[in-house]
Image 1 (cartoon, rainbow, N blue to C red):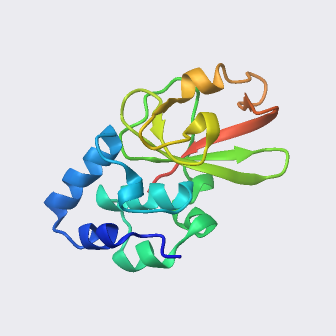
Image 2 (cartoon, one colour):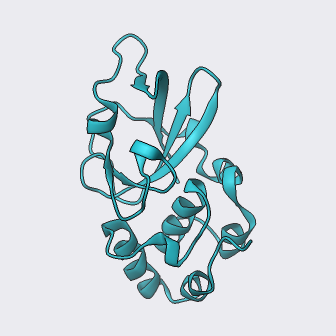
Image 3 (tube, rainbow, N blue to C red):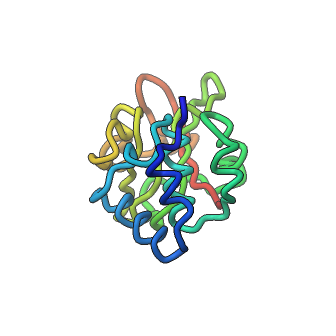
Length: 162
């Protein structure tokens, strides 16, 4: 199955002004990622970031899929979220489960506090059209180790430098 839809392929080839316009409509929720990309959370975030002008080439857009995006997002080299800072718009957010050392979810920041959009992420973004607020979903950060309690386990949240 093709992850990028025909509309997504067409839109991805537009000039930077039109790509940015569509990228912003995705971030704002007035357009749905499903029109452009039918992949999992990492794919949706990669496509939205590409449309917003992140350092993602057209080749990378078609080369990466699923967890392959984790290499590009490089969350460990990014900034660990402190639980209260406002996150700039258009940043990839990675969720890391400490127990099994797994990056289990990606989302994109909307620029509205700690709000994110994603797909397939339950409370961290089930449907693109419904944003999630990480402050509400995750609550207070654990003071002793900087983790958050989520889904019965400890997780860390990273902001990609991409």
